[in-house]
View (spheres, rainbow, N blue to C red):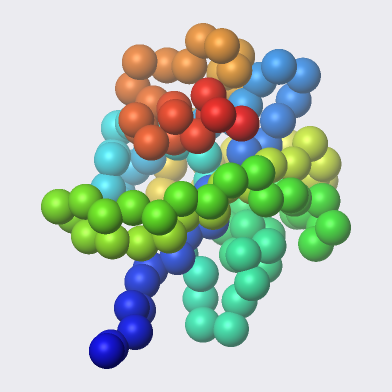
Length: 130
């Protein structure tokens, strides 16, 4: 039997008080115009935390220490678009003020209990379960 070779993505929730930082996706070809957290595919040889650190730097210009993010959820999905594994991490620690650098055109602090209507559905479920 052939082993699965699935894409793995790390999504990172930056938390402040009772709010989460969401990015309006732009120019990615996936859920553009909708809100989600910083996220991206693992590069070869990277750990989930290393991906989180790299993606936060690339997408919103913040630095995160290896010890700060914690894994808060994992899901395996199988949809018409494909199959994969998503990790969800969260942190309350970072350096620098976030700003849109790549794959997004707007950042927004959203109360955890009042997410924008345009929040990506699986992201909404992850936040509700976090």
